[in-house]
Image (cartoon, rainbow, N blue to C red; front, side, top):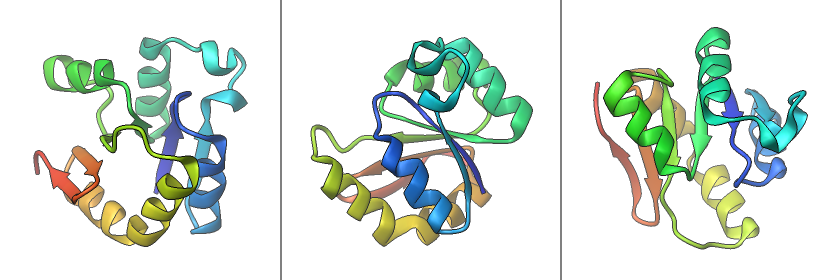
Length: 118
């Protein structure tokens, strides 16, 4: 699976996803880096068939209202440390990917995954 990791999430998340066999790009790797605006990120993700991984509710609204980005994983954990966040992803990456095969919008929270559509 292909992912685009938004700026408010650690670049180590992209490394973790890559070590799990996925293609992952963090915004810090883009030409505009972490200053890349949301519309550009959504268009890039859609063009490259990537899932946007973010904590930003603006992406949720854009997905629900305009259908962009086409595929979205919202991290709804609140304030957790990077170690705990990476552990959460590591423990559930197979479940996350399975959910994203079936749905275009998934949230990862402290209680697990919420699948919003099919």
